[in-house]
Length: 579
Image 1 (cartoon, rainbow, N blue to C red):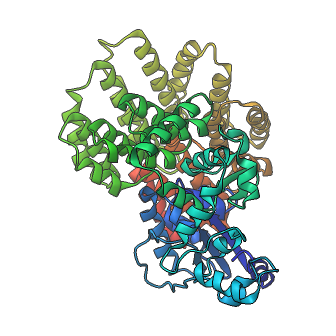
Image 2: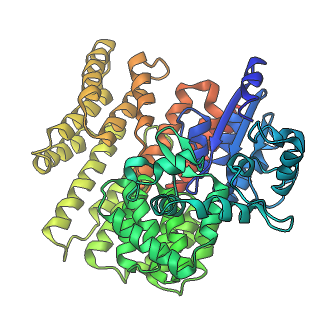
Image 3: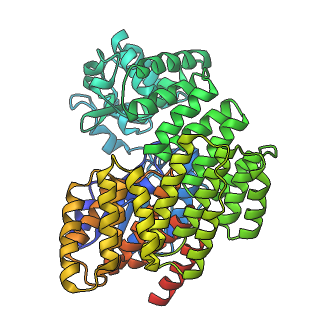
């Protein structure tokens, strides 16, 4: 396939190629297909890529973890009805169920003439044909054959040839390196391999395939080597590897350590959940497959609750339902069920369940929950001024909150969040008295955070600037703030406020600043980040009208994931009108 890509490009086609690993999901395919655009909604990715003269390639799909294969199958089902051409490259066994609309082309073994070309030139034709026939025309097996190799009997599979003529002839150093690479969930850099003394021998024996500086065994050899281990041997090897990787630092090291720890079957649930929570901050696809693997080994409610929480981050509602159905009734289950009901638009049932749960909460947890609901209610709209009725409703609920029986630390956090919320409401409703009052409170609370105070002042200036001269001066200050701001959320907040003020004539520097936000993904495990991410995609669709359909579909998907159903429905109406 790689050999024909240049020919396809010459005809003016766009070729988008994605290579799969165990942690590949929709978002990872999107990153590979779209120059780092983190689309994760199937419809938005289809709208972006499913165009005429686009060849969409997914390679090594058999490597995808079962946790993610169904969603990729749904993507393929939707793409087949688009104008793009799709090519899926898969080794046996095919993890996908039959998908209508695709034609299957099996690559069989090489014929005798083609197979002979992979053998040494000095072998006579009769012998060469015998070798090709015995090895079933398998290209890698033919490439690995040497005059010292024993030919398998006709009934003997290629795998047996690999075992007896390739693996069995390796030195101990090479076997240790091969085992480590075969055990790993991803290709490794040479300096990441603990038993790396055999890397040269493996490379000289054509056992490895390289991805720049990283390598892994050819899959035939890897799979044969894995088949030779007993369950006890495999678990001990995973335990040894987990200990090795626990000495390393970094996100990838934690992932590989946790992967080996799970497969060693010697993990503590609390420690495992903590590791997976850390991993989820950076890559929820990895966290999702790890928690599923752990549940297969030890099915417990705490692991299933973690699986539910990760699925919420990823907007995977069928998976949420499946796990919740396996958990006994409890306040923890009810609060998650309420979230799912809210996402599905059943607000009354969601509120009923939430109220049932509140009696089980501590005073601090109750305040935290109520405040999070107020912030979500304020954010649940596409970017525009808040309605006066809703603003008054939120303010009334704020003033009725009971702060008794909570610690000073919890009170401080609550007052900070509520004053920020009141300040935002004041700017939206032009309530200068409330703006001044909340700003004074925040100056005391944020006395050591001048950057945050500057953000508040810039947002206020944007709200009250009533002449082109004042707006121009404020925009200069905003531009300077964006260039020096160290906090991603603050930067996004002021960019969005400025987009609202300057639309539809956005300054070039503002568009560039907004586009730059996507180079640093927001965390999916935090509700505030999920809401902000949805707003980013909304504004991206406003700015880049040629991709509005795709970007707004993504925004709708992310608004629902953030439990902002009203915002999702509002944007859906806007999108329908714009088509």
